[in-house]
Image 1 (tube, rainbow over the protein chains, first blue to last red):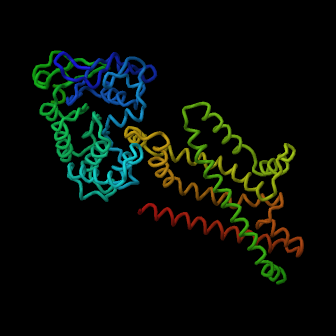
Image 2: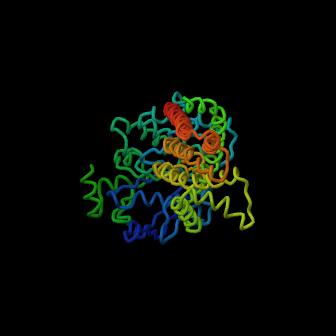
Image 3: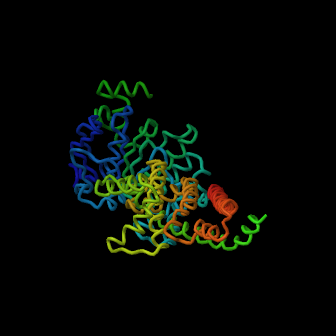
Length: 247
Length: 216
């Protein structure tokens, strides 16, 4: 599936509706993600940004609409297969506290993909090198700073060779001085051609790295476009208000 | 004086009973742990077909006296054609009973683990069972160790009820000595003392394991 410019569309979201009881969190979201694109999703809290991400890897069930991966409805994939193709990074890191860094990294590849342990360890070392934490390979999560934890969490997700990475406010739980190290890793990842959907309030990152910014508010996409368009010259009143408050 | 000398004389015999009590308890806890882990997980299932029977199981076994449960297994089941010797009957009843209590402990333990742990495991492609096995249960068991120790102690004491169906554990051994010596006070007191030593050692042992796991 490609758009009119010939770029391959990896994810297509059609009229997505998600309700928590009576509360409608997503009210018909339509969106396309091209391969190797980095999309930053911004918007007020409670607007549905995280929920949208969580629907894509089916951590949330949705009531209506469709999500396609490579042109195929995600409901038609085996759910665990689907999830190995979509990596996710959480605000609270969610490293497994009873395992050290290496064990955190090799658990899923060895259990889900049945990769040989030695091979998984090789790969873990390579990725830990990339995120600058090879010296922490034997450390337990509680011995790491927030920034280090999040970099390990990114490496852990990358162990599965995902085609898409979802970042759910990856720096929101970090002390300000630790945000940069995580954003740097994400920048490298974007530059290496990873398809990324990033929910964040880091406008500097959005301006510098995003191919597109999507503004979600009240369960719908209010506005989307190139970073310079959205950040400098937003068309909608709500977007302007939101940006005025956070910039 | 005679009371004391009778107690000392019969002490080795009581110790054999104590050893039987320990074995009985260990087997029952083993069954209870396996049963309780699955039923505890079942209690959290969103599937009614799994959830309801598990809930019913827990409610029924917690809501009826252990003595009645033992009687059902030993005296009641033979009428249905299932005849168990006293020892297996006792292990069965005690195991089923502790399974209910341990299920509640396990359920609380699983619920004490932040939801993000399960979501992270699932988002990596692990199945429900793999997530439980490698991520949730190891953390849950660390948290519930004190409660499990408690249950172990409770069961050690409750196993004395097996005496009514003729299992030669500590209580039964004591009654046997009393029927021979008529030293009710010293022998019952001696039994109590042995139970106390056993539960005290178990509680210390659990605390030791707890501390070792905390530093690991």
